Picture (spheres, rainbow, N blue to C red):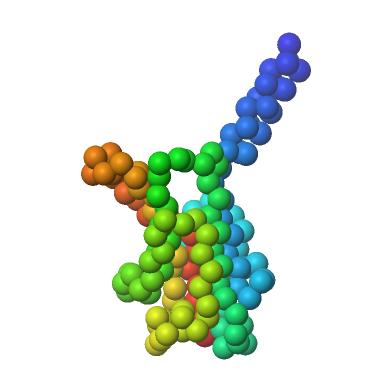
Length: 141
């Protein structure tokens, strides 16, 4: 009986863990962060000057499990004063060139990346409370 109970707990735990959202942040094809937990301190990464000054791109990929149909995801890029400088609506994956990032974040020291999700139905969207999820903070050179 104990073995059956243990197997059932393991099965439900595996199903629960497999059904979590996750995200991956890459800079110039190098993974900076891959996680499924929202932790501002742990998800803060420092970018070195060589990577920041080179050519390339920043890629954010958000994976939703299970995928929600009739919901629209947006990715938000803010500075250290919480000013939204770049917004990509209707996508869970974005590639931004470093040139575009440098132009938008000129003179800034941090880029915070968030995501939000809203229903496509306007009536439901008016009733839903939106919470932005912190994905990553990048400290610039």
